[in-house]
Length: 121
Image 1 (tube, helix red, strand yellow):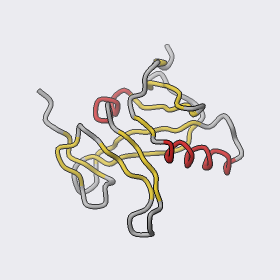
Image 2 (image 1 turned 45 degrees about the horizontal axis):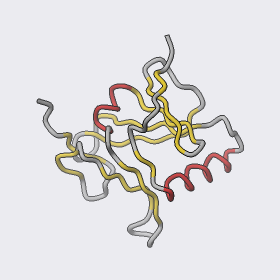
Image 3 (image 1 turned 120 degrees about the vertical axis):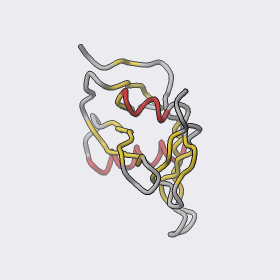
Image 4 (image 1 turned 180 degrees about the horizontal axis):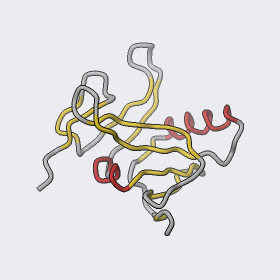
């Protein structure tokens, strides 16, 4: 069994996020790296966003490509991230960095790194 390859994104990456991920991959010097997105329990709102560079999808992953970047999201996290958007900006040191916009979040913490998911019907 292998990962599930999708023809549509689960999380939308803005052009600024794509550029930043490509820069991070280039800095590592390994073109086989992709972006792993997910959630884990914790943070001040219940779930925390996770991001890392990774080479190998697992059988528990959904995989899709955005402008040459392979994106991997485990199936458990996908239900919390479906329809979300990830942006990157450095307007200033206090407001810069990664910014999530997630329609599945009932509320988010002030720093934007964790959220409380909406109730599942």
